[in-house]
Length: 391
Image (spheres, rainbow, N blue to C red):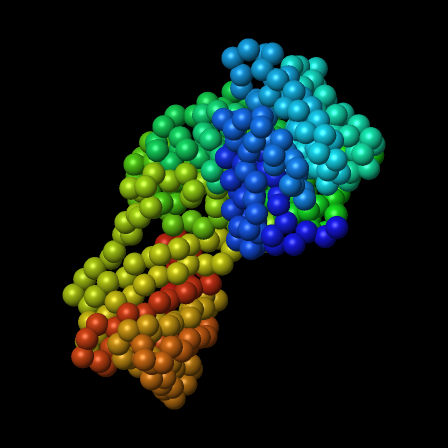
């Protein structure tokens, strides 16, 4: 039976890392009946939920106990209890469980996870209930507990605060899956009955990103340097932001990691200062820079000020006046003809600055003029590609 927005969905471990993200997305999609089972809830509560559930997402488990025996009680034991409650209620609804790639290893955690997997498969065979056993790599993303069992969460948390990290083996390859991808795969199973399965019928999260510990640490450290401040100084930088924007291609690991890093910023570190270059004419402040997409800057000009009067061979720019009034003038360097564009914050219009044209921008208004400027390449003082010439 297809789920509806009011179908009761049982989530065990709803207060954990994956559970919080899943519950938040389900609520955002309009699901109104989430049965959230937490570690402090009673067995009676679980039994009651099992009578009503239209779909079960079993996330609860133990991964850092004081006694190895807790692995079995919290992983395979809780799974057995959940399945017994479902069968006692005659409820053959779909059951999805998250497991770990460590289920293939010979340790107590892996053994307890494997037992839970096998119990889920056996339940499906006995009752005919659809089952989804997701064997997952290490999961990273927002709301994961640092200094616990996630190296990504620990590195993000510590680096954002200027605290030390340990990289014991920089070449160690770490397979990772992103929390949004985990939630998307779970929702595909819930809403579409779809999942990518391996040869043993286990479901897999996709895509999987593999990165070395050394690369992981360096990438997150570069995120800190981009924002500057104390976190950057702790890494030996001068504290000035590099303003570097990471690779943001759709689905890229760096994009997902950057979003994760920002979620670990201390509450008093959301803002960071920019280096304003001020003089009698106004100011020029670089905002963002990337090696592939150039740089963005903010230019403030006082009334009557003219800036520019130069041209470029290859560098090209886009000007967008967002406040005030101005005139942008162009002249092809072998021509006497001057081309003018009137610009204003009252009517946002992007003006391209072509190569081979000397150009300037004049503030013709009564107050400061603010212009957002994009250049197709970050400024390189060794190769500025900028030549003075009056328009």
